[in-house]
Image (tube, rainbow, N blue to C red; front, side, top):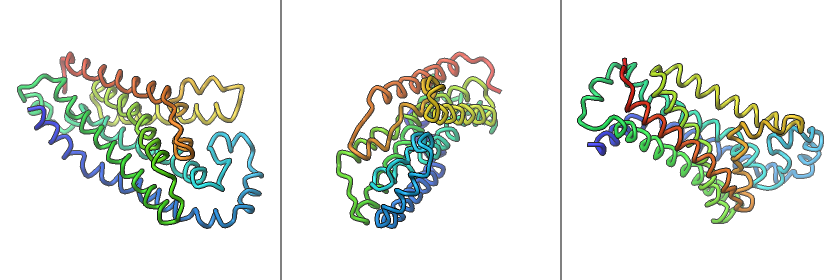
Length: 266
């Protein structure tokens, strides 16, 4: 029965997943297509970068546009991709429980003779697979685009990117599902999850721009994410990824416990 619930959950999010995956892939391919013009004008862009304050370059990872990894990392993987993927995690995660309540289908959902936590777990697993599809589509787009412009990064860097990308969005999915289970209102859960994500991003930017506020990096999930280094030389920051995964898993387990014990779902 939980398999049936998983298939239903996956069908419910299928269109959303495909649109996010398509958007991420198109954006990455567009950035890669623009790179040859940068590669052929290295000196001009290096002069332009020299005019940027060091704090800005450090914060956004734009200190090296002359390399494929530096350009794609700064223009796609460092900021835009995690925010796009986080958007999917928030949309799907915030609807996990609250969406059923708002549609009025929660009674029918709970009438299934399966433990509540297993129903929610099926939705979480479906969302995780959706995130994996977006990640794999993105990495595939990088591989195709890099091959097209003769900038093949190698299997190692691509594998490192494949490992690195999911970390941050698993955490976002975790607290989005937790808020959905605890609050029961989709708009509120989504708003809070988005607010937490943006605040975390702001903390990361401030920490990179000012040594006085460097301590804020410990409050940001973005501090444990470095896809640019993964693409550059296959560097994987395992400690950060493990911490992100643990935070996400803890939030998901808390959501399962809250959903199982919650009395009113209306």
